[in-house]
Amino acid sequence: MFKKQYLAIASALILTTTLIPTSSQAATGTKNLQAKYNNIKVIYNGAAVPTTIEPFIVNGTTYIPLRMMAGVFSKDVAWDGAKYTITVKDLPNSQHANELAARDAQIRSLQNTIDSLNKEISDLKNGKKNNNNKKNDDIQDALDDLEDDLNSDYDDYKDLKWSISLKGDEDDIDVEIEINLDKYKDEFDDLDDDGDVEALVEDIIKDIWDDKDFEDADIKGEIIDSDSDDTIYEFEGDASDQDINFDV
Image 1 (spheres, helix red, strand yellow):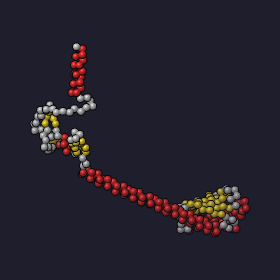
Image 2 (cartoon, helix red, strand yellow):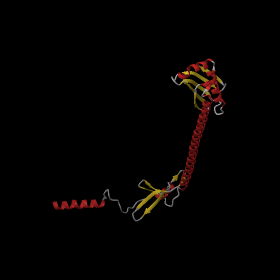
Image 3 (spheres, helix red, strand yellow):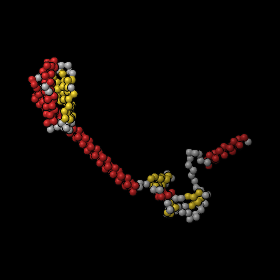
Image 4 (cartoon, one colour):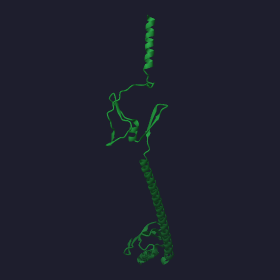
């Protein structure tokens, strides 16, 4: 009896395993279904969706043809009869693709324009920089030439040894006049008493303003004892009114 019960239980397990698929198995077979048709329509954005197969209801669930809805949502549906597989994928939207292509072309065109403008800006900056450098070089050359001329004209003013140096640009110039008081102290004092030192400074400043490159330059300067490096005179020249002032 025990053997019969064992066989009965084993048979039941085998039958159950055969009829009920496991989680790794797909259910197959044929079922008879009772479908209810009731002139079901699908409306998308206010318009009826056309179909050759009418939707139907089975056990309270409405079934709609997949291919019909795929057309609504711009999907492509493919049926593989050998594998019993339905594949759904996005359809390329030609209008959208054309718009994207047009925008990409516009973006590329704008980027090319931006690159071209950036190059022009860079060229202009480099050109301006080069022009400024050239202008600065020209001004420095003119200032050096003027310094040479002043030293040539005044280096032995009143039989004393003077040295003149210039720094600056077309707007502002610093003038430094040197004399060795250890050697020319008495002679300098005599010139100073006679007003010849101020006359020297005035002549130098006027010669600077007579140069077309520096006619609008404001001038600051000093007379220095080259032996002690002490400042003897300070002076200023205002180009706007050609006024010259001294601070002894």
